[in-house]
Image 1: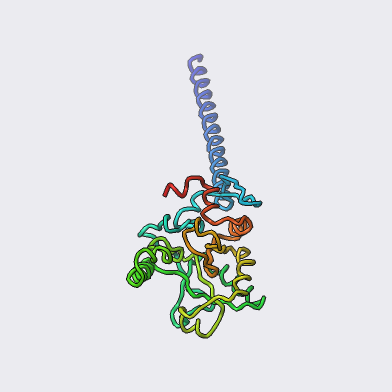
Image 2: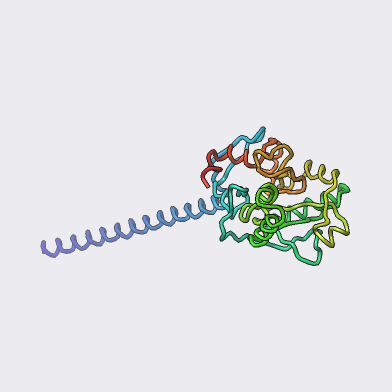
Length: 267
């Protein structure tokens, strides 16, 4: 009889242990699922609101830098210049421009990311009595090579290096830069006949940064940009950085060196 009782007691204890093990497993699984859900929620939040990795003072404005990847050549803050060349493999995502432009029978393209802002700028200018057109937008590497080679053939390498950027060194290759002109029939027919009036240039200088564009080659800053004053050439950076750069009075090269010291020498 005792042997039977011991067997019964052992079986009951075994069942109890198994039950406790099952309960423990269920609890552990539920905790893992909860942690997994928290991780998914956090990942979703971070994808919508990037972590700020730096905060920089540009003039009187402090801007937040969500990622230094924004300075890579496929992003809108990339610096392109005579000394900071795009790679030969660079290919921007482009869209046809939706604003008036020179060579009206031939489509012009810009980087897709700036299309809406460019249209808003042109519409705002028109509302203020300034009719604008584009005289130039995206240029391919091949187009820039032809322009450079043609200038060299006509005027020599020394003058070409003063007035024309080499292939890979023009912001027009990114699709993030445009040249503005005052609207006119000659410009519409031939972009070589485009020009920007003093009043339209003044409106752009005062207002373009609200739409994310900066005057890329300001007067008196050739030593910093290596490009002479071009009141028609504007570059998209997005409203936050563009307004900070504009208010600071610095060139984009000077701002980049302030945000990322050594960047100009690292590429």
